Image (cartoon, rainbow, N blue to C red; front, side, top):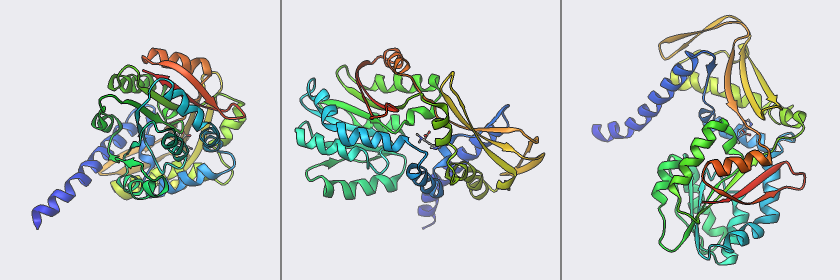
Length: 326
Ligand code: AVI
């Protein structure tokens, strides 16, 4: 019995150790930073759902419109080159947007295998249970884990191309340099003729972008502050959320939309046995949501070893799902 408990406890404490190490390393750096990948505990997931439904956050609606209205065109652009293919989705989430593409995929007879990859085991189980009921004949092979490891595990079926999807402007949460490294790694895992379908948020009126990260109901503020609550709970810390200000910024000359939490006073915070001191007005850099231009997207494709095939945009031209070929 004891050894079973030890085996079950091990991954949790390993994850906690990595979380503690990243938090301390980030807050002991100059300038201070935290990693946005830690936003997504249960409360963070719920807040992100609220963000996606709030009026200012246009990204989800734009991409939904693209997939609702242009999935058939996306599938036929792929089918013009590959008669049979498997779909792999990095960060599948609830697949509420991808389901439109999956329906067209099945209708076109290009294949029936879908590999959703997600860091959340709950999401993968949910997709495996519900998608085949919604799309009869779809073979869902869920993979729970880190993107690159799982992409390697999804493998290549002989005679079939692979189409990797990375939607929702998740690439925006990397700096352009990190994005280049990540996409070059994806390219290394693909064979010539495979595809990448990737969502980019476009540069636009700076007000619209800033408002999307500063919604009036305060969901984005709470989403950022929730990471302090998570650190308190999981790492034995004593952040006081009301001593920090949510401060989003957008630089229209670079397309970098960055969120900060700014300390409202001189203060000391205890985290897992260490003390971190904050000066009044000192920022913690929380997240980047990089916005791109069509030229920047094309350049990114070629520097990562892809050929741009076609951009699919919404009616307002605010968002792009770009189809690239390896
Ligand atoms: C997940 N990601 C694409 C979102 C974004 O727009 O950068 C995360 C987010 N952060 C604040 N609002 C939404």
